[in-house]
Image (cartoon, rainbow, N blue to C red; front, side, top):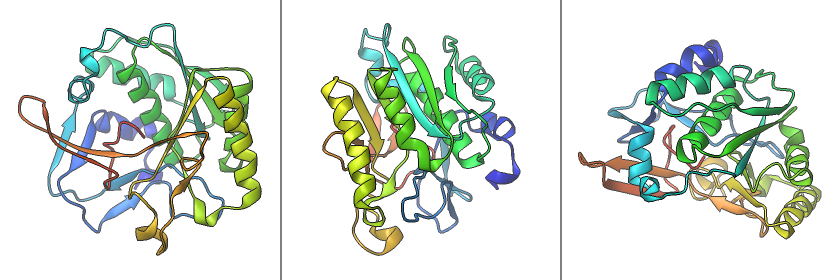
Length: 260
C-alpha cells in the first residue's frame, strides 16, 4: 500500500498521530522483516483498525507535559539520521505546520536526499515533523545516509561535525542477527559522542524484545549500546480533557510513537 502511494499524497491524510484500540492481524511493518545486519524503521501501520483516533501536536504536548515547560529548544540543534531521506521533506513539514498552527522552520539537509524508499521517506517525515512539534525552537539537521548500510557513517559525520547536542535515530536492527565487528564499529562512534556530551538516541523496537518477530528473545541494537539512549515506543489514549487515560511503554505501535 505504501509503495504505491507517494509520500506527498499519503502524508497529509496522516498529519496527526493515529492509534488503534486493538492489534489486528492485518498490520504492515513499513520497514520490512528483520534480516541480519539490516536496519529498519520500527513503524507499523494497521490497515484495518477497529477504532482510530488522531491526536494533534497540542494534545501530545499536553499529554507528556511539554506545554508546561518554558523551554522550546531555542539555541539547540537536533540531528536526525535516516536512510534515503524524503525528497519532499520541506514541503511535508510546511504542510504539517500549516495544518496545526505551528511556527515554520527550514530543515538543513545533508547527504543524498533521494527519498527512493517509501518506508524510510515516511519515517523521515515523522521524525522531522514531530521533532519540530515537540521542540519548535530547535534547529533540525537531517543527515541522510545513502542506504541502510551507511547509517553508522551518517552518525559518525554528525558526531565529528557536532551537528547537534542530540542525535535522533528512529531505526534499529535485531542484535541477535548482528555481528561483533558491526557492534564494535558503532560503539566506537557512540563512545566518541558520549565523550563530547552528545546524546544519541535509538528506537528499541515495538515489542520490548524481538521474540514475537524472530522467535527468540533479543533486544535491538544500537539501542542496547552502553553509550546510547534506548527509547521505547508508547501507545497512548487520552481522556476527553486531554489527560492521559492509557499510556503503555513498549507496546505495539502504529504511527503513534512520538519517540520513534
